[in-house]
Structure formats: structure tokens, C-alpha cells
Image 1 (tube, rainbow, N blue to C red):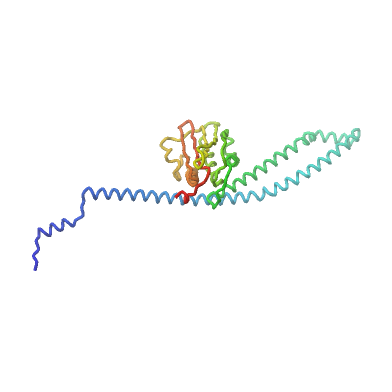
Image 2 (image 1 turned 90 degrees about the horizontal axis):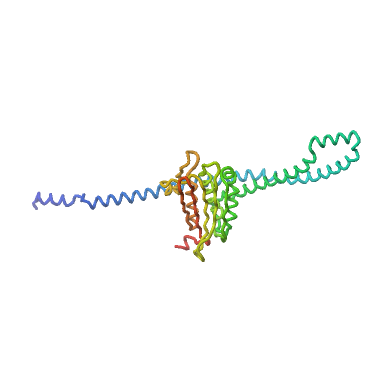
Length: 320
């Protein structure tokens, strides 16, 4: 029967114990850092999923509102056209009555007609009614255009085809959407360059521009400010790009916030005034287009966002 050496057993036991030296500490720290990175990625993914769900809900709401508005606007527009034709006939009849009135000038009926004409200011009404009708038609047409633009914006996130689009036309359409937001706070200066059509998802690019315009409007704290929209092009051939700048002379962004402006749910606005989703969504859309979005800002002087987009879209699969 083999003998057991207590000293040998003690040595073996020590050799089986895990090492608690610097190497193990280093491995634990590395594993901890990896877990932190993984947790951050999971958190960002979760934020994006929540963001996508919220944006999908907003898109469905916008589409529903646009549809509900479009129906009454449709029959108002139709009835308005009929009313204009009726007024033409009424004015023709009124002209005939005015001609007959001349033959009654010395009669009691003629004097009564003259008094009524002066009382209702008939000559002024004949001039003003066509102007009112024209302004009303323009207003209804504007509402129809806004509804149409709203329906375009509601398609963000849906399956769309990449098409060649005129970005200047998209900017004008977007300004029409946010006009009521801007007109009381800022003047808009457009400095458009000579740019080609861009292969893109137009409604998504419009969404980015709208977000930047609204943010620029909210940043203006003075009685009235200026928002400047510029466009231009750089590069040639396959490397040709188009850029769009939206600049305001508002309050600017603090340096410690610059690196966070594209983070989901980050906002410097008061509670209830902003979701922190607009710039995050814009960043994702520009990335999808293989472009990039940059920001420069000076507190108290204003902010400028610059979007750069390739003229021709190259899918991620093709690049890989």
C-alpha cells in the first residue's frame, strides 16, 4: 500500500489552486470591458427598435390625418369651382339689371335701387368678390398641397424604390410643410447651387430637411432670426456628392452636447417639447444613403448642419 507524503499532498493542493496574480486581474478587466461594450450595443439596438416603433406609429397617424383631411378638401374644392361658375352668371345678370336701372333713374323704383346700390357698396363688391374667390382658391390649393406633402412624409420607413430626385424641389416642398412653424420666427434665405438630381429615397431626405428646419426654428430665441439653406456639389464621377446646409443664427449648441446630438432620445429642450428622435432618425437616413451629416455650432451665434450625399446610390451589398 503506497504511503502518502503530507508535504507532497500540500504541494499538489497549492498547484491546483487558481492563480490570483496580475494576469487573472487583467483578464477580468478585459472581460468586464467586453461586457460593457456588448451592453452598450444592446442598449443602442433597443433604443433604435423603440424609435422605429414610435416613428411607424407617427407615420400611420400622419397618413390617417392626411386621408381624413383630403376627403372634405376634395368636395370643398369641387363646390368652390361650382360657386365660381354661379357667380359668373350672377354678375352677368347684375349687369343686365344695371343697364335696366338707367331707364328707371327718375322713378321711385330707380331711386330705391340707387340708394340700395350705395348702401351695399355694389361697385366695391364687384371688384372685391373675384379677389376673395382667387385668394380662397389659392388657400384651398395650398391645403391640398400640404396634405399631399404630408402623405409623402408618412411613407418614411416603408418599402420604397430608389429614384432620381430634384433636391431643390424637395426643399421647397418641405418648406411648404413647415411654413407655419417658421414664418412667425424667421426669414428663410435660399442660396441654391447648380446640383444634379440625386438617386435617393426622396421622402426620407425630405424628412431629414424638415427635422433640421424645425430644430433651427426652435433654436432662434431672438424676436426674429434667419435660416439659410445652401446647396452645392463636390467631386466628379463616382465620387461626386451633393451637399445641403441648414444654418440658423440661434442660440447654438454647448460644446459638451455636440457629440450627443445624434444620440437617440437626447434633447436639450424642456420636458414635453422634444422627443430627441429627430436628429437620430436623420443620422440613420443619411447613413442609409451612404452619406454623412456634420454639425458645427457656436453658443450664442448659431448652428449649421451639413448633409453630404453621393449622387449615385451604391447599395451596401454591392460595396461589400
